[in-house]
Length: 66
Image (cartoon, one colour):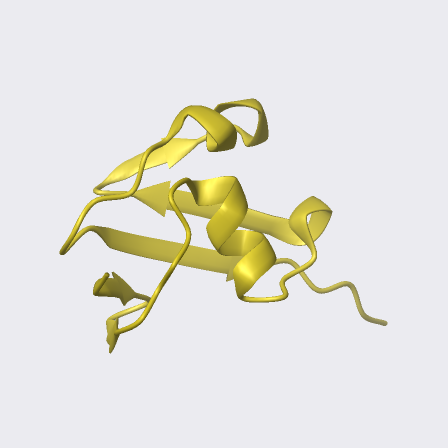
């Protein structure tokens, strides 16, 4: 499947839901915010957010620093 992730076309995605995508990309779920097709998702909604061909996602990773 092809998705647009953070403005970049990504092909060969196997994930079926947002939670699976975060895992497939190797991202730390507790430190991520996800917008799926223009809708900001709560982490509890990730497993219900089904991905489809051409979907647009913005994934922001929160990083603490000092």
